[in-house]
Amino acid sequence: MIAHGKDIKIFSGNSNQALAQAICDHLGTQLGQAESGRFSDGENYCSIYETVRGSDVFVVQSTCSPVNDNLMELLIMIDAFKRASAGRITAVIPYFGYARQDRKAKPRDPISAKLVANMITTAGADRVLTMDLHASQIQGFFDIPVDNMLGSPIFAQYFHEKFLGQEEDTIVVSPDVGSVSRARAFAQKLGMPLAIVDKRRQRANSSEVMNIIGDVKGKQVVLLDDMVDTAGSLCHAAQALVDIGGATKVYACASHGVLSGPAYGLIEKSPIEELMFLDTIPPTEQAKQSSKIKYLTVAHLFADAIDRIYQEVSISKLFN
Image (cartoon, rainbow, N blue to C red; front, top):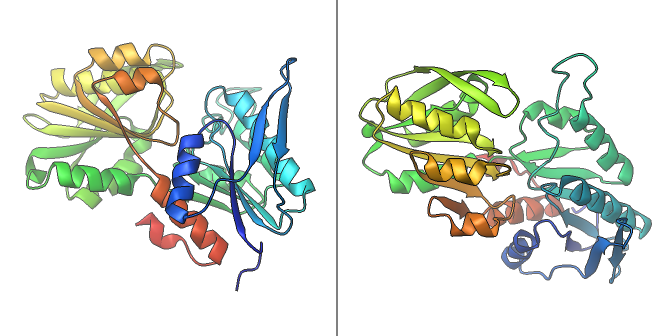
C-alpha cells in the first residue's frame, strides 16, 4: 500500500539537471515542469508549472558549488511544494554540502551540518535521500528519515572488471585513518588486501604523509575516499605510495568530485593513472578535458531508491 502521494513527480534544481533527467529516463517518467533562478538583486525564486497536490514529490538538488545558492534554491523549492499541498516531499541530495562541519573542532565553532539539517526539515521535507555522507552520524542530525546510499558498489563493479584475475597484485588503500572502515568494506568486496596511509594534517586543506601501514611494494593500488576537494591529501598519498611504498601504479576513486582551488593542477602532476568520480556533482569542462578524470553515473541507483521509496518497500537491497 502506498501511504503517501497519489503519483510520483520528480523535479530538479539547477545544480545537477543532467542527473535528474537520467533518473527520470530510468524511471520512464518526465522531469517536472519547474523553474528556479535568481532575481537581479540576487534573491532566489522558484515557479512550479504543474499541479503537485497529493503527489509524491522528489526534488533532486546537490548542494555543491555555488553551495549557498544551491542550498537556498532547494529550501525554496521544498517550501513551494509544501504550500502547493504535495502529499510527501523527499529531498534528493546526491552531494550534501556542509557535511564536513559536523562537529566542534575547536571552541566556538558552529555545527553547520546540523543547522542545514534543521533548515531542510523546517522548509517542509518529509525525508532525505543522499549518498556517502562525509560522516554517517549526520543522519542523526535530521528529525526525518534519511537514506544514505553507498557509492562503493558502483566502484567495486568497475574495478572488479578492470582488475579481474589481478587481485593478488592489487591492494586497496585508505588515504587516512578516518576512512579505514569504508576502505575495508570496499577491499572485502573486491577480495583484495588493505593498506593505510597515516598522515598528520598541519592545517586545513593541507596534510603531511607520515607512514604507510601495509605492504604496497610492486603492486598497483586503489585509493578510496568519499570526496576530493583541493586534492592535496589524495595526491600526497598517491606520491607517498610510489616514493615510500614502492607501488607500481596508483588508481583512485571518490564519490564526490568537489575539485576546488588547485585540484586540477595537482591531479595532473600526480602519479595517479586514473581518478574515478560519481556524477553526484556534475563534471566541469576542465574535468571533462582531463585525461585522468572519469565519471560513473549513479542515476540507476537513485532511480531504484526513488521507486522503492514511492512503493513503500525496503531499499536495503541497494546497499549491497
